[in-house]
Amino acid sequence: MAPTSVGDSYTVIEDGTLVVSAPGVLANDSDPGEDVLTAVLVVGPQNGALVLNADGSFTYVPNPNFNRTDSFAYRANDGEAESETAVVTIVVAPGNQPPVAVNDSATTCEDTAIVIDVLANDFDPDRDALTVVALGQPTNGTVAANGDGTVTYTPNRNFNGSDSFTYTVSDGQGGSASAIVTVGVLAVNDAPVANNDSYRVVSGSTLTVPRPGVMANDSDAEGDELTATLQSGTANGTLQFNADGSFTSTPHVGFVGTDTFIYRVYDGRAYSNPATVTIAVESAVQGTPGKVTGGGSIDERVRNFGFIVQGRELNGVLSFRGNLKFHDKKFGINLHSTEITLLRVAPDAKSAMFSGTGRVNGQAGYSFTVWVEDHGEPGAGRDRFRIQITGPGGFNYDSARLASKGGLLDKGGNIQIHKLPGHGWPCSWGWPHGWHDHDDGDRCGRSKSWWCGRY
Image (cartoon, rainbow, N blue to C red; front, side, top):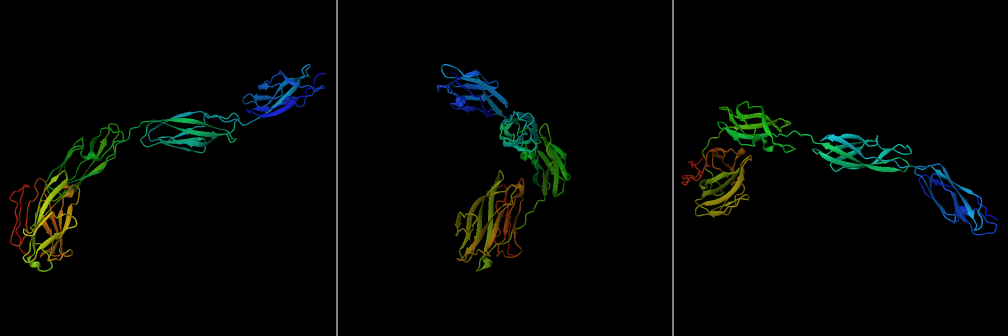
């Protein structure tokens, strides 16, 4: 007698794979003679792929996105006869289909943010709503999700060229997909930047500033060549202003104070912000006589000092050397300073040699303190006095003055050395009681001495 076959049913999730092990479809089939049965395929499925094995096991893969009922037919064979045809029904249950994210491209201008609708070309086979759940940051900017399916890309300042970032969408059902957004950032000219400047000049003199002049501290992001254009001139003098940034300014006769003019720079496509040039017009200081300097704790009447300085200005740096002379009728004198090194003290010659350098352009000056030690008493308190080399803005005046009220300097004071433009440094002077010093070599181009008595 022929075997008997019974139909079967199975379930698989959409886009899944159904694997049924032996005896598979033969599990509910039988043979009167208890012969070993084998499965023979009669008709395959219409909406998927099937591999049916003789032992009844099989593998079924539904077509992509198919989610209805499929079937196939088989017979059981006992080696002599076959059963009637049995139908195997497979229910393909609907399953979540992952979304599809499609690459995007956008274009913006330098220094300009752009909103990109990255979901506009994305879709979900199940028509689930999509959301942006992750963003990969670009190399040359930043990107942020806006919560409505769009993102905002902001390029780095002054960046232009190609940039890119990634994003990931989710369908809320466990499905996700990623895509790349490429952004072209178009170059846009940046306006140059002009910065304020300041200069000093002595009343009655002409200030001449060579190129690049006022443009020395100006800049352009693209490195374009700049030209200077005058916006408004000076009110208290004459001004010759040139496109290369150089200029000549001559204050009105007798004017002392602050004068200004305004300019902008141009890179060939855009003008900068206005910048103000301030010119401090200073009065010339006349020399004043020196005064007797002295100190000490035993006999103030016989301690007199003279000071000699020689120097020259090189590239805004004042190099100087000096000779601090002293006279003591009773006791040996030594000199001390924490700010300079006294290179040589000669008690017999009653002098101390020193040297140093000081920045003069745009600086208040260079100064150091020296105090007297006589008869073992260091005198660091009341015997302290100060020597100052000054050069405001690089314009120094031809004068030497002792910042002390009348009388013997026994509690400290200031000695200031100045220089006029076009003149050498005063090479020597002295304020000794009854003697003077003079630089016969005239190394600095000028030599000046003042006679002083007791005050």
